[in-house]
Length: 114
Length: 113
Image 1 (cartoon, rainbow over the protein chains, first blue to last red):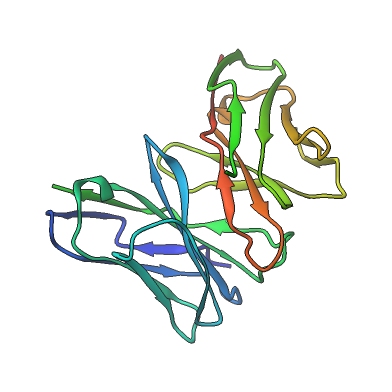
Image 2: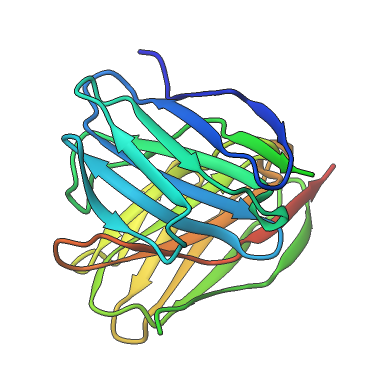
Protein backbone atom coordinates (compact mmCIF):
# COMPACT_ATOMS: atom_id res chain seq x y z
CA UNK A 1 0.00 0.00 0.00
CA UNK A 2 1.45 3.37 -1.02
CA UNK A 3 2.24 5.82 1.74
CA UNK A 4 1.31 9.46 2.07
CA UNK A 5 2.69 11.50 -0.78
CA UNK A 6 3.34 15.23 -0.84
CA UNK A 7 4.15 17.45 -3.76
CA UNK A 8 6.27 19.29 -4.42
CA UNK A 9 9.08 18.13 -2.13
CA UNK A 10 10.94 21.44 -2.33
CA UNK A 11 9.75 24.92 -3.12
CA UNK A 12 11.36 28.35 -3.21
CA UNK A 13 9.17 31.44 -3.19
CA UNK A 14 9.61 35.14 -2.53
CA UNK A 15 7.84 37.30 0.02
CA UNK A 16 4.33 38.28 -0.97
CA UNK A 17 3.76 35.30 -3.24
CA UNK A 18 1.32 32.53 -2.54
CA UNK A 19 1.87 28.80 -2.59
CA UNK A 20 -0.23 25.64 -2.81
CA UNK A 21 0.96 22.33 -1.39
CA UNK A 22 -0.64 19.00 -2.16
CA UNK A 23 -1.12 15.86 -0.10
CA UNK A 24 -2.41 12.46 -1.20
CA UNK A 25 -3.36 10.27 1.78
CA UNK A 26 -3.08 6.53 2.05
CA UNK A 27 -5.88 4.84 0.14
CA UNK A 28 -8.95 4.51 2.36
CA UNK A 29 -7.87 7.20 4.80
CA UNK A 30 -10.36 10.01 5.18
CA UNK A 31 -8.64 12.22 7.74
CA UNK A 32 -5.84 14.52 6.64
CA UNK A 33 -3.95 16.85 8.96
CA UNK A 34 -1.35 19.49 8.18
CA UNK A 35 1.57 20.54 10.34
CA UNK A 36 4.34 23.13 10.19
CA UNK A 37 7.78 22.23 11.49
CA UNK A 38 10.48 24.83 12.14
CA UNK A 39 13.71 24.68 14.15
CA UNK A 40 12.45 27.42 16.45
CA UNK A 41 8.89 26.26 17.14
CA UNK A 42 9.06 22.54 16.44
CA UNK A 43 5.94 20.86 15.10
CA UNK A 44 2.72 22.84 15.18
CA UNK A 45 -0.76 21.76 14.14
CA UNK A 46 -2.30 23.72 11.27
CA UNK A 47 -5.63 22.05 10.53
CA UNK A 48 -7.45 18.78 10.07
CA UNK A 49 -9.88 17.75 7.35
CA UNK A 50 -12.29 14.85 7.40
CA UNK A 51 -14.85 14.10 4.71
CA UNK A 52 -14.11 17.39 2.95
CA UNK A 53 -14.81 19.44 6.09
CA UNK A 54 -12.32 21.27 8.27
CA UNK A 55 -12.72 19.73 11.73
CA UNK A 56 -9.99 21.48 13.70
CA UNK A 57 -7.75 24.47 13.24
CA UNK A 58 -4.56 25.45 14.99
CA UNK A 59 -3.45 28.91 15.97
CA UNK A 60 -2.31 30.22 12.60
CA UNK A 61 -3.35 33.38 10.72
CA UNK A 62 -5.97 33.33 8.01
CA UNK A 63 -3.25 33.37 5.36
CA UNK A 64 -3.08 29.63 5.92
CA UNK A 65 -5.99 27.76 4.42
CA UNK A 66 -6.76 24.34 3.11
CA UNK A 67 -9.32 22.12 1.56
CA UNK A 68 -10.06 18.47 1.00
CA UNK A 69 -11.51 16.88 -2.09
CA UNK A 70 -13.98 14.03 -2.40
CA UNK A 71 -11.12 11.57 -2.99
CA UNK A 72 -9.60 12.71 0.35
CA UNK A 73 -6.68 14.45 -1.32
CA UNK A 74 -5.91 17.73 0.36
CA UNK A 75 -4.30 21.01 -0.53
CA UNK A 76 -2.87 23.69 1.69
CA UNK A 77 -2.52 27.30 0.58
CA UNK A 78 -0.44 30.07 2.06
CA UNK A 79 -1.04 33.56 0.75
CA UNK A 80 1.15 36.64 1.07
CA UNK A 81 4.20 34.64 2.09
CA UNK A 82 6.45 35.93 4.86
CA UNK A 83 10.04 34.97 5.65
CA UNK A 84 8.81 33.23 8.78
CA UNK A 85 6.73 30.84 6.70
CA UNK A 86 9.91 29.02 5.69
CA UNK A 87 9.42 25.56 7.13
CA UNK A 88 8.84 21.90 6.52
CA UNK A 89 5.13 21.35 5.92
CA UNK A 90 3.99 17.87 6.83
CA UNK A 91 0.78 16.14 5.95
CA UNK A 92 -0.53 13.11 7.84
CA UNK A 93 -3.45 10.81 7.14
CA UNK A 94 -5.43 8.40 9.26
CA UNK A 95 -8.38 6.10 8.69
CA UNK A 96 -10.62 7.91 11.15
CA UNK A 97 -10.64 10.47 13.93
CA UNK A 98 -10.61 8.12 16.95
CA UNK A 99 -7.79 8.63 19.48
CA UNK A 100 -6.29 5.24 18.63
CA UNK A 101 -6.24 5.83 14.87
CA UNK A 102 -2.61 5.88 13.87
CA UNK A 103 -1.42 8.83 11.81
CA UNK A 104 0.94 8.27 8.91
CA UNK A 105 3.09 11.19 7.84
CA UNK A 106 4.32 12.08 4.40
CA UNK A 107 7.90 13.16 3.68
CA UNK A 108 6.96 16.84 3.79
CA UNK A 109 7.37 19.85 1.52
CA UNK A 110 10.34 22.06 2.31
CA UNK A 111 9.27 25.67 1.67
CA UNK A 112 11.88 28.41 1.53
CA UNK A 113 10.71 32.03 1.39
CA UNK A 114 13.29 34.54 0.19
CA UNK B 1 -2.04 26.74 28.31
CA UNK B 2 -1.44 23.21 26.99
CA UNK B 3 2.25 22.35 27.06
CA UNK B 4 4.45 19.32 26.48
CA UNK B 5 7.99 19.34 27.86
CA UNK B 6 10.57 16.75 26.85
CA UNK B 7 13.88 15.91 28.44
CA UNK B 8 16.68 15.63 27.83
CA UNK B 9 16.94 17.91 24.82
CA UNK B 10 19.69 15.71 23.41
CA UNK B 11 21.31 12.44 24.36
CA UNK B 12 24.36 10.53 23.18
CA UNK B 13 24.70 6.83 24.00
CA UNK B 14 26.78 3.88 22.86
CA UNK B 15 25.31 1.18 20.66
CA UNK B 16 23.77 -1.61 22.71
CA UNK B 17 22.97 0.58 25.71
CA UNK B 18 19.48 1.36 27.00
CA UNK B 19 18.06 4.84 27.44
CA UNK B 20 14.91 6.55 28.69
CA UNK B 21 13.34 9.72 27.36
CA UNK B 22 10.90 11.79 29.40
CA UNK B 23 7.74 13.70 28.55
CA UNK B 24 5.73 15.88 30.95
CA UNK B 25 2.50 17.49 29.87
CA UNK B 26 -0.15 19.88 31.10
CA UNK B 27 -2.65 19.16 28.29
CA UNK B 28 -6.23 18.96 29.50
CA UNK B 29 -8.59 17.27 29.03
CA UNK B 30 -6.35 14.38 28.06
CA UNK B 31 -7.22 12.12 25.13
CA UNK B 32 -4.10 10.28 24.07
CA UNK B 33 -0.32 10.44 24.06
CA UNK B 34 1.83 9.41 21.14
CA UNK B 35 5.54 8.93 20.66
CA UNK B 36 7.00 9.49 17.23
CA UNK B 37 10.44 8.86 15.76
CA UNK B 38 11.63 11.32 13.16
CA UNK B 39 14.71 10.68 11.08
CA UNK B 40 16.49 13.69 9.62
CA UNK B 41 14.69 14.96 6.53
CA UNK B 42 11.74 12.60 6.88
CA UNK B 43 8.26 12.68 8.34
CA UNK B 44 7.62 11.32 11.85
CA UNK B 45 6.78 7.65 12.28
CA UNK B 46 4.41 6.53 15.02
CA UNK B 47 5.94 4.32 17.73
CA UNK B 48 3.16 4.06 20.31
CA UNK B 49 -0.30 5.44 21.07
CA UNK B 50 -1.69 5.38 24.61
CA UNK B 51 -5.10 6.45 25.83
CA UNK B 52 -6.05 7.33 29.40
CA UNK B 53 -6.59 3.76 30.51
CA UNK B 54 -3.26 2.42 29.25
CA UNK B 55 -0.05 2.72 31.24
CA UNK B 56 2.35 0.66 29.12
CA UNK B 57 2.69 0.04 25.41
CA UNK B 58 5.50 -1.75 23.62
CA UNK B 59 6.64 -1.75 20.02
CA UNK B 60 9.66 -3.99 19.61
CA UNK B 61 12.57 -2.44 21.50
CA UNK B 62 10.50 0.63 22.33
CA UNK B 63 8.38 0.70 25.51
CA UNK B 64 6.30 3.69 26.47
CA UNK B 65 4.77 4.27 29.89
CA UNK B 66 2.09 6.70 30.94
CA UNK B 67 1.19 8.01 34.40
CA UNK B 68 -1.98 10.01 33.90
CA UNK B 69 -2.02 11.12 37.54
CA UNK B 70 1.37 12.82 37.38
CA UNK B 71 0.99 13.64 33.67
CA UNK B 72 4.26 12.00 32.78
CA UNK B 73 5.33 9.59 30.08
CA UNK B 74 8.59 7.90 29.26
CA UNK B 75 9.97 6.11 26.24
CA UNK B 76 12.48 3.37 26.99
CA UNK B 77 14.74 2.11 24.22
CA UNK B 78 16.38 -1.25 24.82
CA UNK B 79 19.63 -2.44 23.26
CA UNK B 80 20.04 0.67 21.11
CA UNK B 81 21.09 0.42 17.47
CA UNK B 82 22.72 2.96 15.18
CA UNK B 83 19.39 3.28 13.36
CA UNK B 84 17.81 4.59 16.55
CA UNK B 85 19.62 7.89 15.98
CA UNK B 86 16.73 10.29 15.42
CA UNK B 87 14.51 12.85 17.08
CA UNK B 88 11.83 11.42 19.40
CA UNK B 89 8.72 13.52 19.73
CA UNK B 90 6.00 13.29 22.36
CA UNK B 91 2.53 14.45 21.30
CA UNK B 92 -0.50 14.86 23.56
CA UNK B 93 -4.01 15.42 22.23
CA UNK B 94 -7.07 16.84 23.93
CA UNK B 95 -10.32 14.98 24.53
CA UNK B 96 -13.58 15.57 22.79
CA UNK B 97 -14.43 16.40 19.22
CA UNK B 98 -11.25 18.38 18.83
CA UNK B 99 -8.26 16.10 18.87
CA UNK B 100 -5.90 19.04 18.69
CA UNK B 101 -2.33 17.84 19.33
CA UNK B 102 0.34 19.63 21.32
CA UNK B 103 3.87 18.65 20.40
CA UNK B 104 6.98 18.48 22.52
CA UNK B 105 10.18 19.90 21.07
CA UNK B 106 11.68 16.43 20.87
CA UNK B 107 14.76 14.65 22.18
CA UNK B 108 17.61 14.26 19.74
CA UNK B 109 19.20 10.85 20.24
CA UNK B 110 22.59 9.94 18.79
CA UNK B 111 23.79 6.36 19.02
CA UNK B 112 27.53 5.91 18.56
CA UNK B 113 29.20 2.62 17.59
